Image 1: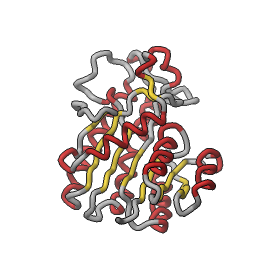
Image 2: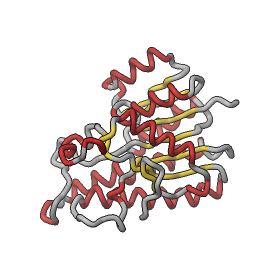
Image 3: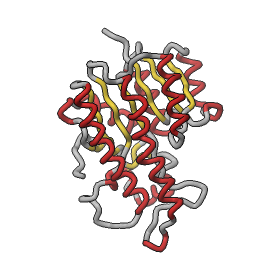
Length: 252
């Protein structure tokens, strides 16, 4: 059996780190490449890499908001492995320390915040696919998965608000669908999907957790297990769709 190679963008914390840990646990022969924006700050990831060894865990610097940086990371990853079986893109921006916050009304919209949300949530994942897809179009089963959100579904929008996050995630879902069509022509066994992990106990959801029923708030470890189980069941016919953590299709 050929050794598996997995790339987790955003693997230094939260759900990304939980995915790295779960993949290593599930496959004792796999190699996991984890990218982080600032490797020096990824203490838990470095501890994991030291424990597992560099043959099992590699850390690569990657800033999803900078295409030149993404291209440089692609070159480094290519030196580690000439093929990937999974590319998991965990980028997601809902709020930050510079004033970005989910808008409740039109008066709250800030063009700079809109651009920042689209850069991270939509353009970033698409650029990851642009630069890394050739490592996955090898003819064997491979998966490109981007963490998205149910609020990106236009048909599911019944409450309004959250303009930047909703729209950037809707754009991400469209990018995923469009890339899936093109890449499906190059490799019949390549699956390209979006994933909604639910509400996970991470920094992204922390300010909003008080409104989430206790049973609906997932740990990062539990969410990682659910998402990998969904990916394991997918076939090429599922490519281009958005799935929730339970494996149900979310309508556009």
